[in-house]
Image (tube, each protein chain N blue to C red):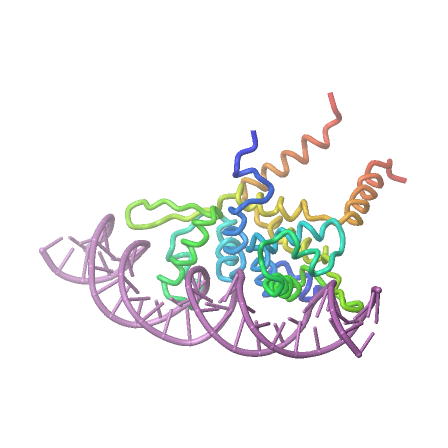
Length: 115
Length: 115
DNA sequence: CACATACTTAAGTATGTGCTTAACAATCAG
DNA sequence: CTGATTGTTAAGCACATACTTAAGTATGTG
């Protein structure tokens, strides 16, 4: 059972990589690794207007990299680790034949008892 | 000695992730995992004009994901594994505290003797 | 209620992206 | 040299992106 979410390549990656192509959005992702944060807290480090940040957050949320929930008047944003892992995994599959050979060599060396 | 190429985050990633945000370019990267290829060979699977493909290749090369060399009248393109690994590595660093805990648990379980 | 807080919506602008067609090299094969 | 192959350059077009400012909507606080 391999649903679209788990497919190694697919249109979802367009959005994920596009979202990551912007330094402001990458900085937001880095910040969210430490835990959830509100919109204004996320905006604080940047010299960009609040609507500007909100637009970045929309791009991130549309890509699936983050999700958000509004409680009262504050919107709490958090990272979606699965989306990050999917993109990482796609890159992990991109190995040349030489790299695959090196990977196997490394495996072999690690399997040998030390000394 | 940590030069800009090895920096975990940095402007180079803009280009890399932007390059990967397009499905045609990702397909080209996948193809180049198998080994170098000429421009027209790379263009062959797509319903896009040759100049269109060349533009994609320029984006990929500007990002550092591929490099190319012209020999006679054919340009040979090949993947630059280090660039792929850098992007993969950036994503690898994006872990929430819970993920880090799970990683440590996994490490612990693997260190236990079987049975 | 009055006012501040925390966003949200709308509209505009400058620049970038993904493609096209048409015309131009450069190299190689007969 | 002739002509086919392989790629390059230039110009243009439709649409997307990354912002902006100005005005609006909820939701808490004294």
